[in-house]
Image 1 (tube, rainbow, N blue to C red):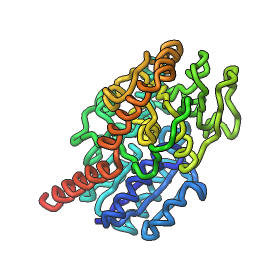
Image 2 (cartoon, one colour; image 1 turned 90 degrees about the vertical axis):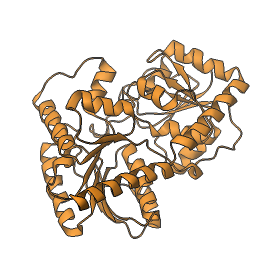
Image 3 (cartoon, helix red, strand yellow; image 1 turned 30 degrees about the vertical axis):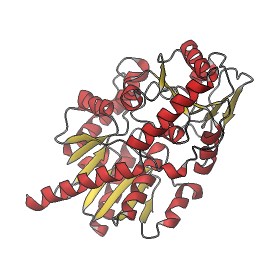
Image 4 (spheres, rainbow, N blue to C red; image 1 turned 60 degrees about the vertical axis):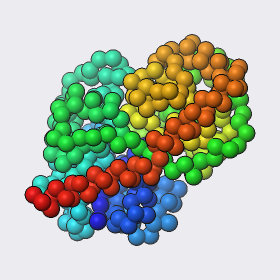
Length: 368
């Protein structure tokens, strides 16, 4: 089987694509990988050195959620058509909505709904975004891609409900949880009395700045960029940084694994999070998970995390303090998160589910 996978290099989809492509190749699947958003750095593509048979096609075309991306989306679609004509894949695994309407015919098209501008805005601002020419184009493009997809996959039931709410029910849809490889993380290091989170400070969906609003009960590391990818290096103004807050730049995977291995608690502060790979990585490192009480986190981490009121810095502080002051309770939730992540969010489980889907779609085409 030959699968063409699209990805972007600006966020968690790249990590997801790494796990997907690596798992597929190890199961004997031929993969062509096409990336968008920006040309990846050497560090980002180092994992491909171990997969020499992957046909990798990096590009710098804009992504569909970016303003003024219409021309780039048309150009990238034409490029993708040319690649498809050249390599003749058996199935398209598309991590952008737009390309779901790329082709007609017998090639199955799997579109994965990782996140969406409209559901992001509604979750963060508690109302729908204002109408504009660009938003109409975006809605039409997303709706068309979803309607034309052979199958739509979401990483949580909550995200699938958002797709159905804003764009209509797809003809075939299901939920496949994202996964990470447990061996990439170390759950056996002695823990420090520290708190960690991953989130760009400009991203009000991740809401990492919540940790700056109140005095937290232990040292906090906020890992991620404070610069928006579309603002050409201009940094955002930040709130006053308290003495126990440490802002860390973006880290590579090995650096993140080391930070997770030492931290006692991961603070999942998001107001919008259709899935969230960072909490999984922290859990596989045996961090206790303190999570915002939002529907997707309840779905994904119910029984394995401690929840605080969404966007409430005082309640976050109190919840963190309860674990900082009680090492036994913290260890209890760390073990629950670790076992939960291994059982539900492993890369192997994710690959099993996708291969089941691919084979089912291929059989449907063969018998049509």
